[in-house]
Amino acid sequence: MKSVKSFDLEGKKVLLRCDFNVPLSEQGNILDDFRIKQSLPTIKYLMEKKAIIILLSHLGRPLEKSLEIDKYSLKPVALRLTELLGREVELMPDCIGEEVKASIDKMQPGSIALLENLRFHKQEKENNPDFAQQLASLGDTYINDAFGVCHRKHASISAITKYLPSGAGLLLEKELKVLGGLLKNPQKPLVAIIGGKKMEAKIYLIDNIARMADWVLIGGLLEREIKEKKTEFSLPEKIIIAVDDIEGLDIGPRTIELFKEKIGLAKTIVWSGPMGKIEETRFQKGSEEIMSAIIKSDAFSVAGGGTTIEFINRTGKSSEFNHLSTGGEAMLDLLSGEKLPGIEALQ
Image (tube, rainbow, N blue to C red):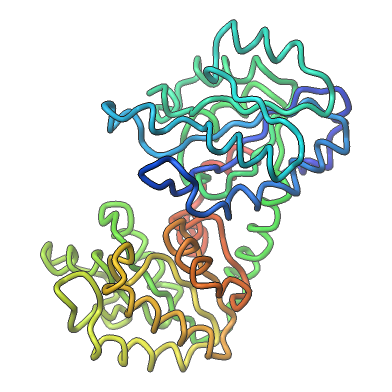
């Protein structure tokens, strides 16, 4: 896999795929800019190399919520990047088309543009080659720095690499170094804590991660769905599902103690997904207790996933973890031995 440092970038148009899928308030304000800040080292490197920087990202699932499509504009991200970089980041009206191409052709080395939400086009999620080719036509080089979506076989992640010289950004390299090292030689016992929602996405991950972990602790709304669907696992002895809950929206005191016991024995801990509906204060206790137990343990600790990281940052505990990953499902996929389409495409 080539690195961004492998290319001569001066004066070249560089398409930099980032993951700016940040949580927004109802008013459209960014609630947590962790993913934006994690992309800054690569952006600044490209600025130093006097590249023409064209940023690509998605935000949310706008086509599935078509009545609110304007809510998913990347405008708040462009404004936050402008603040963080001290340089204007121009938001393009779309991510493809003649108007966008004409604007990019006028850009000078060191300038930065952000293409509008890739998922305003259904072809992005379809990994459509024509759409990928239209994106590729805007640049000379493609750099993937979006680890959080490398488990997706989407046009801006996978198909686009067929049409441009491609490599990995500094953030992607960092994620692969830390998580790849953990995959090769994890200190045991290893405890994986999985919560949140997205049952369909995580069910196979639970089975996969159980092959690597000593215990997999399941909480949050995910635990409820698993019980309702009576899901069978291939290694049930390794999987511990919450034994009690608070109104079905947080893990209960018996579960907290059970989980804390396993966390206390761990040498490596991987956490993705909150233990309850943390949007409401009264359902945060489970996540707070689990986070506190992870911090107090002697284990090498890794946490990932947008909601989990937003919660950790909100409570001011980010420095207490050994590594905060920009990926949730991507992190669990990698650690469970799955091949990530975004990584495969670069290789």
